[in-house]
Structure formats: C-alpha cells, structure tokens
Image (cartoon, rainbow, N blue to C red; front, side, top):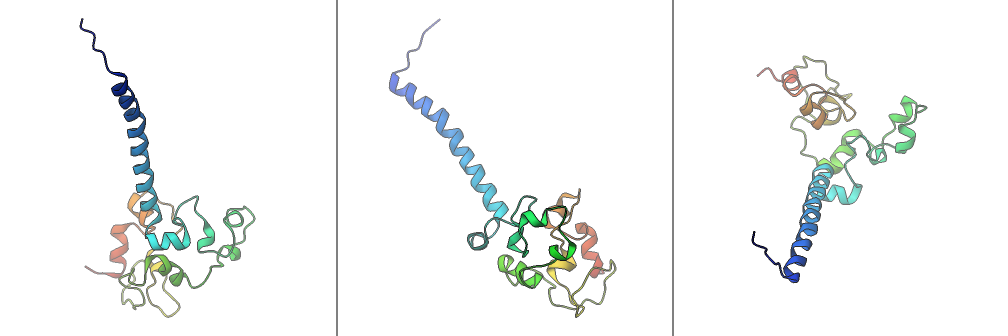
Length: 158
C-alpha cells in the first residue's frame, strides 16, 4: 500500500472547497427561487415578494393585514377590501399588457366565468383566482379559475 502525503496548503484548499462549493450552490438555489417567486424585479423592489403564496404579505393587495385576514374572525367584507381596483392592483406588478382579452367583450362564455360590471373580461376575476386551491399543478401555479384545458374553451370555440 502506497501512502500519499498531501501538502498542508493543498489540504487546506480541499477543505475550503468542501465548504465553499456547497455554500455557493445553496446561494444560487436561494437566489433562483427568490427571482422565480417574486417575479418582475421592479415590482419586487416596489412591493416586496410575490403576494401569490400561502405565507405572503396579503397587504400588497388587501387593506387589512395578513394577520387580520388569516384570522377566524375576519368578515368577508373585510377580506374584499382592496387597495384599489383589482385589475389596477394586478397591473402594478404584471403590467398592462398581461391579459390578451382584458377589457374586451366576449360573445361566448360557456363556463359562466365572472365578467366586469360592463360585461368585459378582466384578468383578475374572469381567468384567474388568486386564492384558488387545486391539485392540478398548472392551474395552481397560474392561479387559473378553471383547469387550463377548460379555461380557454370557455370563451374560444377553437
């Protein structure tokens, strides 16, 4: 059996790499997750992390605090108090060109999706539901009111 002697300096470098590489990988993972969750960097800088998660800050959109809204004693009327028009709130982070049909009238509405008071499509209520709970991963991820395959054919015949 041959014994290899590693110089002290090389041994220290190997130890440093064993510590530094996992720390570096962890840093990349955390950064990537933050960018993915938070969305647009300008919106993140202005409004903080994405409000679309279970533990997010509800006060990005709602008047009441997260603590109040998650309480058993929160009235529906309290939960419905928003910091402005729902579509305007969405557009602060997502921009005005976010929905392809926003503001348009639909001639077909097979699923009876909710429309604005003037019977136009709104991104925030017609197609999306920020508080949806679904086992369908695509529906949950995009906060779709219906499963993806069903949603499009609600208004489109093709």
